[in-house]
Length: 136
Image (tube, rainbow, N blue to C red; front, side):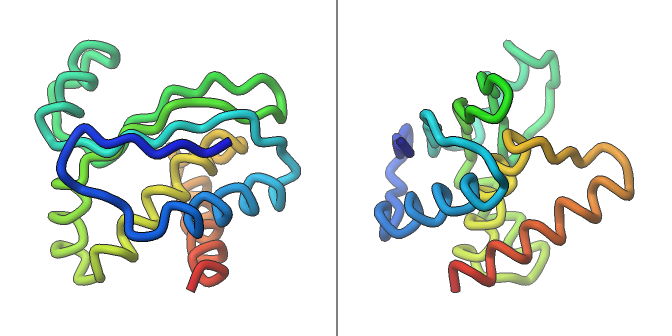
């Protein structure tokens, strides 16, 4: 089950479509969806989590807490809508495209993809692009 929660005034335009897309991504990656909670928030909310749980005193667009066991996918994905908006401007892309990239990025981590090395980051970006095309 995919759940969408809001700690800010933002609302996804089509939760059902996005939820089905994420479910399809998980299945395509050979994993089983148990429960993924997306929590949309602002910079302050996400910054507090970043400091409290990760000891990072920085702003970020996404923090995910992965509770997956093997291929059974479950976790909480916190997304700062403010940060996504700023990043969309910085990268000169539409807000919705950047938001969808961040949404799929979080769940791809749960499916086993990393982004710490250059090679891993390249593969992650390829996967993001592949799945973004399926949503379009």
